[in-house]
Length: 154
Length: 154
DNA sequence: CTGACTGCAAAGGGTTTGCAGTGCT
DNA sequence: AGCACTGCAAACCCTTTGCAGTCAG
Image 1 (tube, chains in turn red, orange, green, cyan):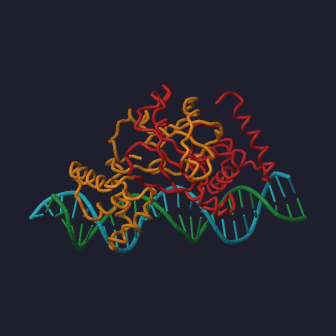
Image 2 (cartoon, helix red, strand yellow):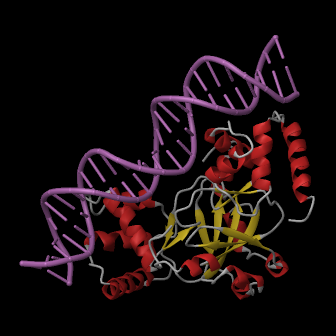
Image 3 (cartoon, chains in turn brown, purple, yellow, cyan):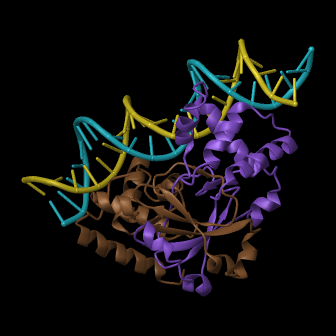
């Protein structure tokens, strides 16, 4: 993250709140800043502790609410499927996943191109590599057909 | 999944149990068969219902225990981080993740090569595509250094 | 001012664990 | 026969929700 990047993100955030008609509260600002200022992809509780250092009175449920609100707004994204629980897979051969962000269903696909891509050197610095696969996100045909509201359903 | 693939997986499963010194119970066999016979990446409860149709007396907690046991054995894998809760990310520009299977920490990395790869046509049949990124799994340097037992820690 | 937002506390739901009985090897 | 495995039920933990007071616009 380059210098000034955090401020840039915060400004974008303020503008997006205005556009979405969300009130710009201190809690929201600090919760966003907490996520935006780290590369560690924190979970709700971690964000909570970080924000608490500056706003001792914030509550954990506000953190949860805010995090999902901002995610729905498109200002944050989540690592891994949205609200999902663990899903299991017995297919041990190399393959990739298409995951529907609405219903959580995942479909496999193969791609020689993807399997062949070499990972950057920098990875080695992180640790050992056990495997790699592509995760494609979208809205599956079924969910699109059901055509419910964009947000709010599982 | 080709014909006979299921039987192949089941045989590999039996052999692996023998090697690992795990008792080959009917519950284990059916739970594995349930996951191995579908491409739907079921969660614990879905597996539970499927197995129950054939073994009405299995309990949900056995399904959970078995699923994680088989995952630790390497006979199953999970979609998304291991036991993890949702993690949030304020980095909206295209990037990829290196995820430690032990501690769950995720690190970002960039790769022009990866960004450039074209997805196979078949994807279009699944639904719309919102985004795609690579998820690399491994054991991070810190966890490797701590050198705890391979299984069982968060 | 007024409706949206927060904090509190309690409910909710999925997952894990302790224990005693069962069954595989 | 011995010990791992299962089923049961309670415990656990994270997450969500209802409500009343508060605050941004």
